[in-house]
Every structure is written in C-alpha cells, then in structure tokens.
Amino acid sequence: MTPCAVALAGVERLAVDTAPVIYLVEQHPTYAPIVREVFRRIDGGQILGFTSAVTLTELLVLPLQKGDVALAQTYRDILLQNAQFSVRNVDPAVAEEAARLRSKYRVRTPDAIQIATAICLQCDALLTNDAALQQVTEMPVLLVSELAP
Image (cartoon, rainbow, N blue to C red):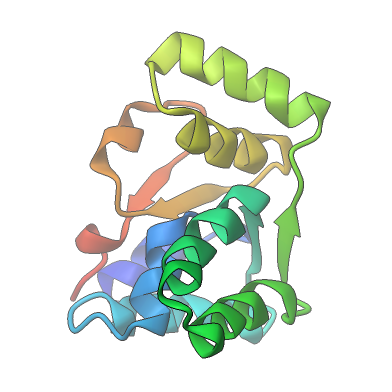
C-alpha cells in the first residue's frame, strides 16, 4: 500500500488546502502524481472533497496578475465544476471557529479559515503541504510531501 493510500484509509470527507490544487494544475514533478491520486478518489466518489472559498481567492491571484485567463478558468473548473468537490463560503460558524484557531495556534487567517471550514464540515482530514498546520490537533493534517511513495 502506498503512503497516500494508507493516509486516506478511512477518509470519507477530505478538506483540501490551496497548495495541492496548484501542484495538480501546474504538474509539480514530485507532488502532482500524489494529488492526482487524491482527486481520482474524489472524482470517483470514494472521497468527498471540500475547500474554503479562500482557496479560490488564493488560486486566482497569480493568473489574474498575469492575465492568464485559461489558468484562472482551469482553477475555477476544478473547484466549481466537480459534483464530488464543494467550495464553502465563510459563514459565522466558520468565522468563529477560525478565530478560536487563530487564538489557540497563532495561525494566519487564511489557514485558520481553511481548518475551520474542515472542522465545521466534519472532514476526516486536511490535505496541505504546510507543515506548520500539523500543530492543529482537532483533525489529522496530511502533508503532500509525506504521501510520496
């Protein structure tokens, strides 16, 4: 069993941070195959994928700066056109949980919103590549870098 398969065993609801989506779209030489496997499971209905609207904001900045309409649309399509993947808005419950997380862990607001979204949606884990988020104890934080075969 690959490290990715082991990490995803029992995961039915997965929150996905921004970096894994970038790795997928931009074909990161090391991480794209791992994220492709995760999204294959999401696309196949084995896992439900979730992210915060913050991800869409973070993903679109560089394509908009560069005027790369095609890349911006690719990001939109991945996040918004998949029946097994949901982008959730920041509602008052997420905002309150994010504030609690910021207070407890001193994480940046976008990270706190990502984690709070995952918690409020009762996700089984968060997929990221930000090792600093592993300090969060409310849910498992899976690092893409640790899922490589």
